[in-house]
Amino acid sequence: MSQKTPSDTAKADQDKGGANNADTGVLPSDGVTLWQVFLIFLRLGLTSFGGPVAHISYFREEFVHRRRWLSDARYADLVALCQFAPGPASSQVGMGIGMALGGVRGSLVAWLGFTMPSAIVLAVLGITFVHFDLAAIDNVIRGLKLVAVGVVAHALVGMARNLCPDVPRATIAVVAAGVMIVSDTVLAQFGVIIGGMIAGFILLRTVTEPESYDAPTSHSTKGAVFALGVFFVLLAGLPIVAHFDHSGLFAVINGFYRSGALVFGGGHVVLPLLEAAVVDPGWVNQEAFLAGYGATQAVPGPIFTFAAYLGAVLHAGEGSGTWLISSVTALITLIAIFLPAWLLVIGILPFWDRVRHVQSMRAGLLGVNAAVVGLLAAVLYDPIWTGAIHDVVDIVCVAVAFAILQWRVMPVWALVGLGALLGYVVGLI
View 1: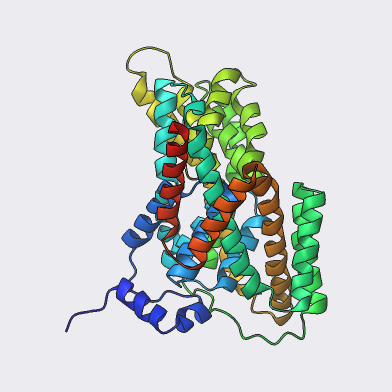
View 2: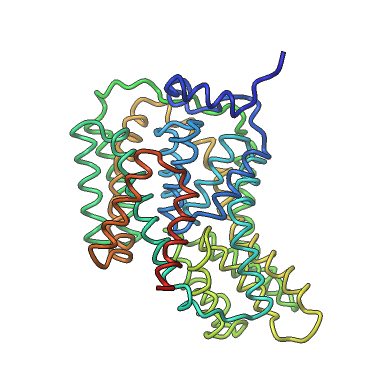
C-alpha cells in the first residue's frame, strides 16, 4: 500500500474544507519535511517583493490560506509576537512558522530559504562594487509595488474576516488603524498592541471561543532560556570583546548584532543604525551605502539582507583575491544581524504558547489580534498605498490583482512574475 505524501494529505484536507487543519493550526501530516519547508521559503524568497507587511501577507497566503498548515489565530499570534520583539518582523514571522512546522531546525531552514536569494545578489553587488542604474527598471519595480498592494489588501480582508468577526474586535481594529495613521511611530505601535490587549481584557472576556490551536509540545523551555541567555550575553559581551580586538572583526560583528537586536519596527527603521555602524566609523562611504540601499529595494526578501552588501563592500576595491574575504565578511555580517531575531524567536515563542492558555490572556490575545489587523490596515494605507498608487490606472491594476487572488486565478508567485513582466513591457512602449 502506498503512503500518502504531505501534499496529498493537504489536498485532501482542502477538499474537506480544511476544517481539521484550520481549526487546530498544526501540521496536516507528520510527513512534512524540512526540505519541503526550505523549498517553500526559497520560492517566497525569490518572489516576495513589497516590504515586511507584504511578506507577512505572502506567508499568510501560503501557509494559512493555501496549505492550511496554520490557522489564522495561530498566524496572528506569531505576527503579534514579532511586533512585540525587536528585530526584522517579517523574517521573525518566517522563523516562527518554520519553528511551528519543524522546530529549531525548521526555523533555520525557513530563514535560509527566505533570506538566501536576496543576500546572494546583494553580496555579489558588494563584492564587485557594481552601482546598478535602478532607473532602468523603474517600471518593473512599479509593477511589483502594485502587486504588493493587491496582496496586502487580500490578506487584510481575510484576516479581518476571521479575527474581527464582531463589533468589539472590529472597533479595536478601526481605532488601532486610526492611531497608527495619525502617529506612525514605534511608540504608537507599542501603544496599539498593548491597548489592544487591555481592550481584550475588558471587552472580550465573555467571548466563548474554543482554543484555536494546540500549542506545540516540542518547544523546550530550557532551550528557550538558553537562547535568551545567549542573546543578552552577546549584547553585553560583544562590545567588551570588540574593545580588546585589534583586528576590527568583532567591532563589525558588534555593530551588526546591535543593529539587529535594538531595532523595533524592522525594515527601513534599521537603516540609521546600520549607517551609524558602518558609515560613521569610516568603514563604508556614504555613496556606497546609498547605492546598496537602492539595490536592496530592487530585490525580493527582507531588507535586513542589506547587511550582506555592507559586509562585502567593506573590502571592495582592495585588490585581487579579496572576493573570498568579502564573501566571508558578507556571511558574517548577515548572520550577525539576523542572529538576535532568531534567538528571540526561540526564546520567547515557547512561553508565548503557554501563557495563551490562561483565560484572561486568551481574551487579551483576541484584542491583540484585532489590533494587528488595524496596524496592517494602517500600513496598507501608508506607505504601501500612498507609495504605489498615483493614478486611476494604478487603482485598476490593484483591483485586478486583488480579484485574481480572491478568486484564486493564479498563485501569488505567478502574479508577482506577471506584475514584473507587465511593468517591463510598459517600460518598452
